[in-house]
Image (cartoon, rainbow, N blue to C red; front, side, top):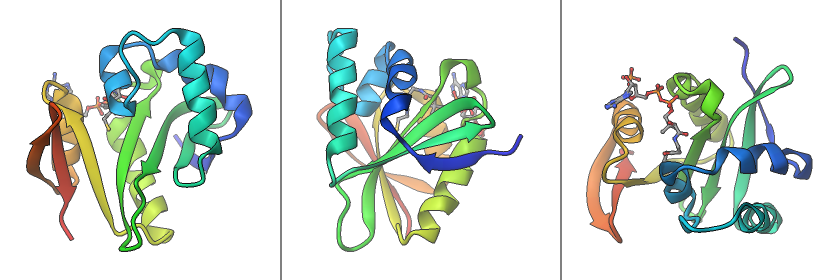
Length: 148
Ligand SMILES: CC(C)(COP(=O)(O)OP(=O)(O)OC[C@H]1O[C@@H](n2cnc3c(N)ncnc32)[C@H](O)[C@@H]1OP(=O)(O)O)[C@@H](O)C(=O)NCCC(=O)NCCS
């Protein structure tokens, strides 16, 4: 498997919005649980247009495997990190996130913050494997900080 990281483009929106149906994914992206598919698509358009956020797609040839993004990007090189693996590619989260981490490191992102819902065990395990340390609980989500 050779993963390529690319900027997320408008034509990816219909595929990506199809991934955002379950509770964990919606929580991970801060999308209300009762949003309609049309509202999810609108949210993605807004995210893409917002220059304060950066979103990327992980691709294996023609297949979109997942996406990740940075919001609340701070001048000190820290940012909140979001990751979604396409449902049909679940199980490859570690692989994609390692690739995403080095991609961001090469672009000067120094410290990531993850907001993870309390019961999202897979995401917590993934973050801990990357050396994130539990910091706080805020608005019902765990706040984990990458050491550094
Ligand atoms: C969370 C997410 C990114 C993980 O990706 P994934 O491909 O499904 O996860 P993986 O199968 O690679 O599992 C990640 C880790 O959790 C472990 N894991 C799997 N199921 C688990 C469970 N029920 N309880 C605890 N750990 C579990 C895996 O063993 C793996 O650990 P390892 O890397 O040490 O082997 C993906 O499920 C997703 O996109 N979820 C919806 C959005 C989301 O929650 N994003 C994260 C918030 S930023």
